[in-house]
Image (cartoon, rainbow, N blue to C red):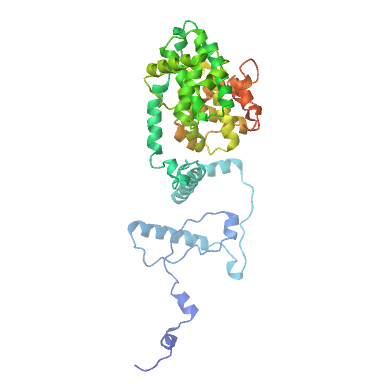
Length: 412
């Protein structure tokens, strides 16, 4: 084959545009819906009657539509138009009679328009659903940042807290166990724990030590009757046992005798220690509210201020005997929820918090309102040990935060 310039073979096949247009004269018109609206006709930029696509099969239904469209098109062409001269044709503006307008509204809408409205409505509904999905809050993976931290035990943390939730029932006591005590009552218990919170603060002990101390006291008093003059000794021994379980360096027996103003001897302390351990069957590994506090604060993505306020509120709960009716995890969740309401001034309980605590906002409201009441009375009366502890710079002056009064107002 010889050399041939590109494009030469197509030059003889060119036809004039007028010849091409002649091929469409008399061609069947593509059926379409003509919406008679004045402004839309004036602004129409597309051909209302394009040629029938060659790939569309001719069926009986389609042929009937073509015939109907052709008749409609012939009627339309009889009207005088100036489009050929380059002018847009505007329909005459006239006043429509109200009865005529109402009659037109009663006319059936063409099927194609009904389908269009249905499609638009479905698209709008789908868009609203998609927007809801966008703004729907999703739970956060709170352990993703600790994957490289072996102390976080990310691989086992879910199993650990599932076990804690199952076993917390064993660490609970009857909410009316004081009824079987003949010489001590709820008020004496509150005085003892308020004093032990100050002792805990003076010795600078770990937070988990305080929660275990209170748990040991309640579990012991539930099973053992105690006379009034031995109640303080029970508190001191419970502190000693909790320190042995939680602390690295712990106060010795003589230190506990000294802070009791030598009300008890060393021998009495050791005897009470043996009695308490035997009564509790040496069961010291129980899930206290502190265990759940740490996990739930992580779910709440807390800062230092929220953390201190949460511990201030839950220590107020330790003093109150009526809070024994709630399990440890529930009190921990309610304290954090109340702290968030106190700081932010609105109810705030995220999907992540609800996922990890297993408690909803509505479930926590009753307990939260009790905590707000404790917060209001924290600086009054004789039991102010928790307030003094958290009214220092070390505790971020958490006790100075105004209570969440709006939670009490909403229940009235």
